[in-house]
Length: 145
Image (cartoon, rainbow, N blue to C red; front, top):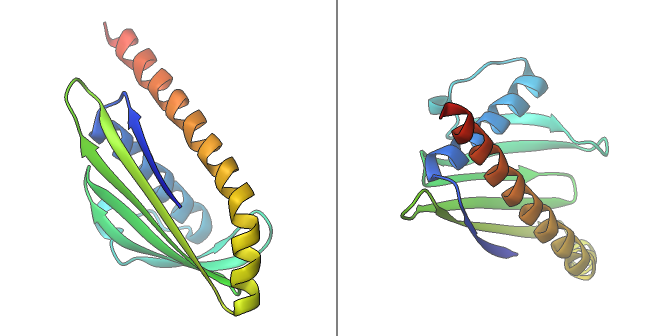
């Protein structure tokens, strides 16, 4: 799945929010408090909300440009990439790419069938996140003035 969104916040603001979320997740799962420069290549076990334990590896960390990770569960391998392009007037483009590879042909078939519905929900969630992030940023900027 590939999703491209234009978001009315600066790239550094968006990137900082993604990294804060990742660092929080790592601390909750491992008890370790990392700084952002320690992320690239970092691997940890993560217990998902459905009880499945996955292995997460941060595969790319380029401040304000790219964040990516690989997640391995018993059935699937997920590769997720956030590419960020800074634009004028405190806006940015986000390109979100996610690929899923199942552990068998049966799992891949199931992924393909469920992919349409899951993709629709994920796009909807990203649009909601976009609106929330823009609102938070605008509220923050208004309170500074």
